[in-house]
Image 1 (cartoon, one colour):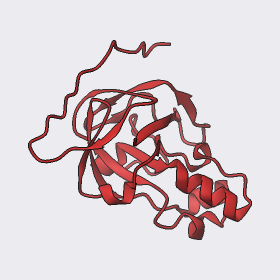
Image 2: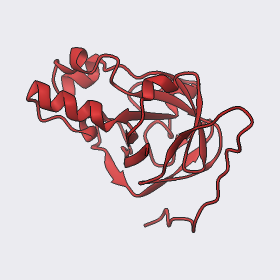
Image 3: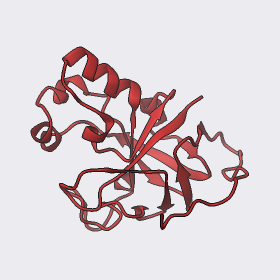
Length: 171
């Protein structure tokens, strides 16, 4: 099953990403508490653009890069918001999908950049090429939790599955 294994938020550029158990996704803004939500990310466009609302990366790509390069590189080092397993994120460019109750649209690949290479290792530029994640737009408001399923939404399918109790976002 495709799912979220980690939610990672950084309040300001250069701050370490902090794992969360749940986060509120807001269309047109991003993930509450994240630097891009507040428009202060290193690459925050003004006005904000949809492909800066949320980023995802596959744990399998991160782990394979670390194993083959011998570099101690983790999902936290990649600085993407949602870490997933069991899904080909590249195949979601131009498609709608659900993460828990939140409807999201894949916009474009999130390729490794010089900034990330300087912060970690230059080898990521080649090692994570076309494996650096997905930039996406949030289409519906809601809470995303660690363990939430990631499911492609087919035309005509409901984007609002039943959910359990809300998480405490202030914790």
